View 1 (spheres, chains in turn purple, yellow):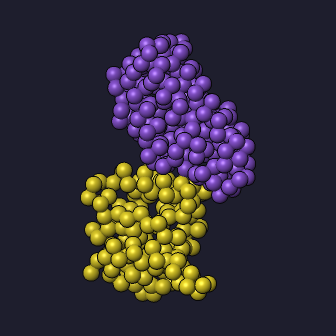
View 2 (cartoon, rainbow over the protein chains, first blue to last red):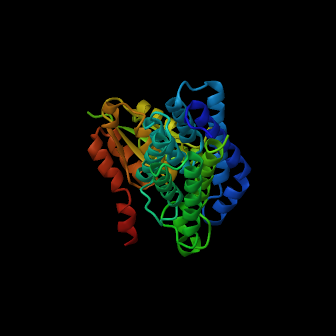
View 3 (spheres, rainbow over the protein chains, first blue to last red):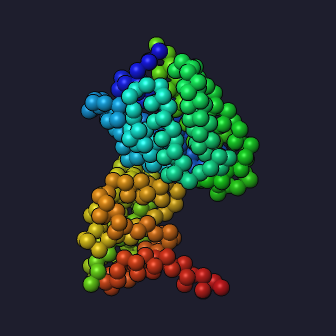
Length: 210
Length: 136
């Protein structure tokens, strides 16, 4: 388990997230074809592929540079709303990188989630990625504050994200393209919440083990 | 006389170019900076905040820029683009809530006539008024 969340650890998280997005690309696009514009998987995969290319082209010197490189790739290459949203997440994390301790990581993650909330102006139960990310940030901070080891804290965050995603599946979407569908958006998994769960699960996989 | 620049942000490059063509039809023989940031770089549908910040920079000649957008990510990408501008320029940019086509045509006419930024933005925001009045 990584006890120091350094550049290499965060790069492993980025690569695991990119791998997971590629593996779930069709599934995410299928979710988005039900209640959106059918491009979420393709868009996220294009963004994360560009992020890895940027890391390969210019190996980042420190965690802040790494997170910023991922942010700029997402902002520039995703094309859809998840571009500025995930981009802002990584940008705010980049600005809040601390000493590499689990507590600093939890605080930076929280700063990223706060950035997504500010950018998208979504609230809980609007049926967006916020419904997965906010519970994850809270679970992560609570577990780290309680002195739990990082693998357990990230596992709790991933569980909270999945629970948040599932809790809004029955709801009517109030933000984004899905909100154009009104009642027809109910009883569908939100694609943004689904990809946000993959982000947190990738952290649990890449940072919580080894 | 003010020279306010305009930026068109759209998911679609053809949609943005056509909107600009429609607006320029109202400006025969007149100069007006209208920059486009639209589509993904592989020709698909999408918006790019880095391209938008470059378009804003190109459209500004010191009197500021009014940005017209289509929907969804166009708005959030434009907001994100503001983060990449220096403070001076950012203070001269207005993101318009106007509908893209109607707002652009209205804004282009008054901007080409030398109106200042607030006036151009106000004209864009009135873009739906003629249609509303006509349809009752």
